[in-house]
Length: 171
Image (tube, rainbow, N blue to C red; front, side, top):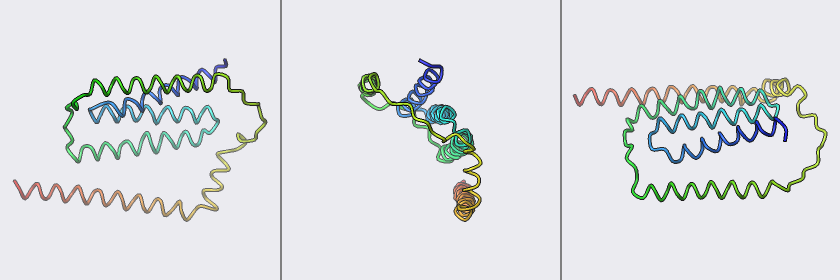
């Protein structure tokens, strides 16, 4: 057992726990924190795979921007229902059994797995290769994506502003 394997198992455990908590928590803010833990642990897995650029993008885009957009959406919808559904104790027990079964299948499936070591050149200048491809072959889709995100941001502001005007008329 190497340190890389132990780090992977720890980070993977955090990712799985974050995903399970995301599905089982009832408070939406707690769900968002579990989602952030999942996103950051996935970035840690990318670091272990020597994909530092993808890990940085994972943290910036998903753990940062997407989470903030979701929080704004939650705040705009005034979601305050945190009551537990009937039969939630059975649901928690079923989820526990499912996670336990999944862990058992993974353990027994990977325990005797023997993969040969192969030489690869994946880690040579990967950030430079991504940058060259992004700004040479894919410059038009990159710019169209930025325009699309700007239009979505302006549209969400306009929708939020219309809701505020309607509330002002009612009062």
